[in-house]
Image (tube, rainbow, N blue to C red):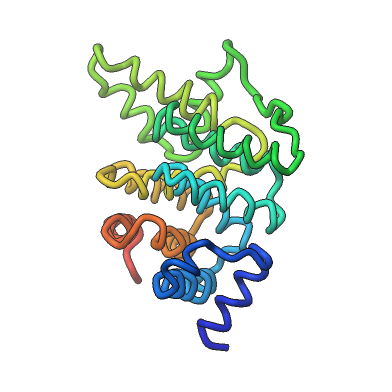
Length: 251
């Protein structure tokens, strides 16, 4: 089966009989898009369609490409992702892109849910409280990154130690400890989010190592980046790929 036929089959599987508006206004461009994303990228590597859509939601949220995000919320539901998994994926972006952009994405999710008569209020997935968020967040940090966390905290200047505390309590305590997505999934999504940001190669390298530590191998990282490529472009993809190759060299 060639990539054109593959793209037709995959599109029908993901979105049914819906036709993008650009089929009428920009058919050549839409063909290039369809055949590349749905005829090539979707068939590269070892990720299933559910994980691919989680990655797509995370990258579109990061990029703030909200019309495309809304379209992919529909696709995510079509491939069997739960409302909980969709919301947790968007929430996971907050420490990296900030609250305003995350709230923009949450609004898009809620609009789709309302249109489909899906409850927008999801059962709480919190596993920490004010007394435990720091300690449990720090424990997750250490689980992902190992001894480097203690060294990083010890070396922080006094006037910057609060940033390290926020990192442990907020990023890892408030988000990574939540139910709804497992640790391997959250860490893979974080790698994709930070890669999509651009200019954060130091953090990309750290999360390459973190992914390796939690069991996401190099093939998985390369597949994830390949899936990100149509949504964030070649420069950011190649920069992130260089980080992967630096931390996990080819044999």
